[in-house]
Image (cartoon, rainbow, N blue to C red; front, side, top):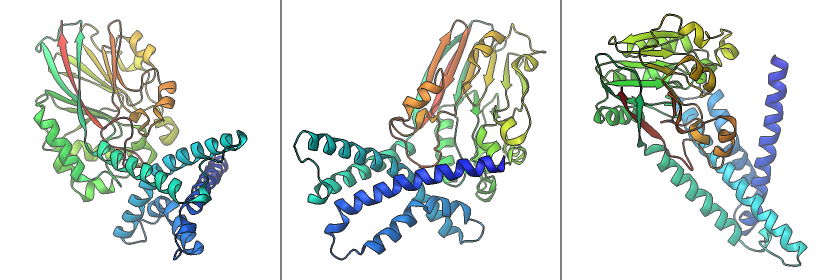
Length: 382
């Protein structure tokens, strides 16, 4: 297993290094050679530091001062996004230049002047600035869902659902405070958190007293959460569950709760619990062995998979996240192929699923093509 991991990591590192060398070479050809005081050795030294800043920041957090490792992680995370758009821009320019030369036209020569390099630089900086605003300016996305079952003591529910907050290295308590304020303005009856609340490491959650921030949420019917893959990747799922519980969040780990004698909340463990923790999750059939199917059934499952299985089991509403809808354009084309639904509301008979693009970010703290969001679901029981 370790050999496979190192082999895969080695291949990824080689590809990553090659792409960045390509970017660095193009930047030097289009800008560096026109800056008389810039030495190529100095340029490449700073360039490779930028390229590996994220990795250095993450692995050095235990022996470098916090300010240094945090700054490296922040700068490096922005570079990860910049790399995508530098690569896209320069590849497009190279293709146009190649086709132009085939046609006998000399187009977009990197070495002819700084115009091409400046244009690309302005484009990438503009994308990063827009993406930062998009990630930090969550919108409220609202859906209306009708469940054809009686809710006993409740006729309707005002549900707020927030997925993929990713509290940790990049998303700190300030963003959580903003989220809590926005949720309280929506005056929800119940709050659902379908996974990736915390991004691998519980350290920042504890140090910044995020539990106190969560405690400012007090919906009358409670706050319910499930684990996502990132809680398991960091190996702290059990500890995270304890701290969320102390913050007033009911963490459902393959568990079912009857709320107000009116509807069920079903919380599935993430499908990656087997991969990262060696524990398989229960089947949906096992989870529903003792529920009353005449009451509304609301399922929290981090990843939007097994849709036909959940429909067959009689689930009325499933809420999921995980996809980020690609987070960076055009990666939504990939998530759209992987998942039957990677964002939005899908209704299939009495079965409904709502997938959120998430509140936070993973890796680059930017979003291009889809803003961060808080989901408001208006449920009517028949």
